[in-house]
Length: 387
Image (cartoon, rainbow, N blue to C red):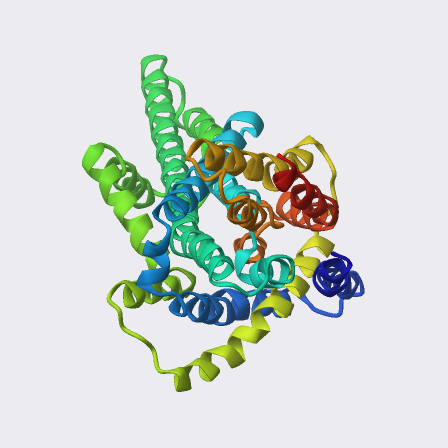
């Protein structure tokens, strides 16, 4: 156990602290920081996901149907529970709640899975199976769902902004027409009428450059965003935008190859491994840089996210596994619980920093949960066999 803390947890904390110090000393400017995020999100992380998933086989997925079903359904359900609770309890927007779910609702299985489980349970077929299942679900299912929700939330925000612009333009024209009519009825001089009109326009217009053509375009955008057909079109566009991201299509391609039984030659693996190895270190460093740009917080939302990630999620998996009749194999239950009790997925904080969404809360949650994992890891290792 001491080896796990020294070899796995301490390096994460040290590298994250290094990123934090570099950020505070302005060693990286904003463009360089975003460049690091882009390297991880668009190159290194997709390569790492592809390599980790392509090693799985159809036999591994079918070897234990109960474990596969619990892993698949459980990860997705807890991801969505985290999303909806974030919206309900903390009144977050769609994209903020999506990033919260990518962080608090997803374990960093690709980075710490083998590093934590292998020393505890050994490098066995069962260990590889559990890691493969959770890794596939996190990277192939919940990650694209999170990206889809982010795109959907941004699209709705753009539509809402367009509606506000259109209403402002309509109010300006209505007020102008009313003043024109009042000026005519009361025979007010043209100079006074024009002065009132200009003043009224100045009071209600959002932008002095807003003209009739702009208003018309905004109204068309709003009109196009209404109705069920438009909603379906918007949802489809958000899905397509998410699937364009390498971090989404790379794991989907890998799982498709696995299901089709297509094996990538071993000679190809080193090509992906070389860039994939940069993922973990740069991702943790970027998490520290992101934390340095915001004020660290330890409010009730951060505590809740940490509790959800390290305590509630593994407790739910533990209970469901017992109810599904896996009680006869406590080692396998323990592996499953430990795989979902890992700290937040670093891909979530990279996405948060890349799109500037939920940055302070996401970075704070990642830092607190990573440190707290040193204690909760020992708790679950002791608790599962005891029960």
